[in-house]
Length: 310
Image 1 (tube, rainbow, N blue to C red):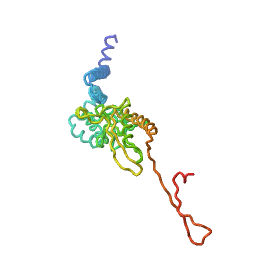
Image 2 (image 1 turned 90 degrees about the vertical axis):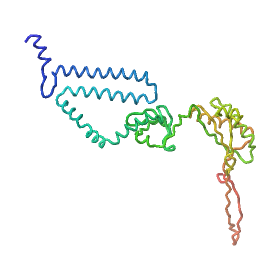
Image 3 (image 1 turned 135 degrees about the vertical axis):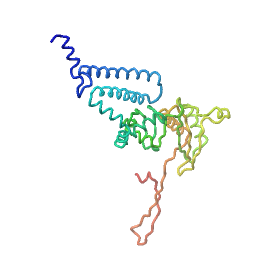
Image 4 (image 1 turned 180 degrees about the vertical axis):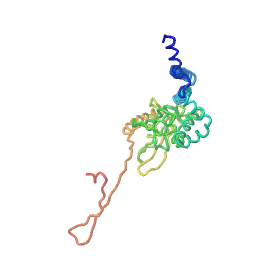
């Protein structure tokens, strides 16, 4: 057998059989070309999407693109084999029935996928947002949105995997979506004997001095000369007067740290001004019997919590 006959044998061997549509050599070569082409197309599409789709949840779109490209490539490769060719034609012909069967068998997976698409389309949150689920049942930062689930990183630096079908039905608060202005509540309590006006003035001064504080007034409120820091007396509590102010910051993280700094500064100023931050006081009364008398004479004794501890 000469070289030309050898090449013809290799290139024609296995063709028109019950297994191969073309020769074995052609089948392998075509399959490799298809997979390489799918990889190249997938890479090109990824660069195009990253360049022109500068939006949130980009990773989700890239995953959908990869799945679509490789499904087409896999279909083309399987079409090179006779048994799969017949099977593929059957699948296409009975696509409706198969879709129903798959839907019944994988309702949860399909629901997560559809809810993932809904999250990407309507954007109740995006990667990097701080969210609160079901009135504080879960609080964390969104790290990833996949076809099946959403990954949330908690304050404890743990990761929680929430199925998309669950998170799409939950009552959700997007803390990050505040247009670069987050309201933080500063709540304090002073004793009834303290000077209320002095306490409120100290609070205003310390709030305005903090570098992360933002003026939350609108243009009309500034024009009407509304106070920059509004402090409300919210309650005559059991132990003192409750004061509350809304302090604005750029985001939730800055607001959390800012409130801590402001509380420390206010505590020092209160101590200097003689303004007391109250704490609970209790008076306990008991009856003490005398062993020297037959009658039950008793005396009332009052003690404070501090005396009890001693």
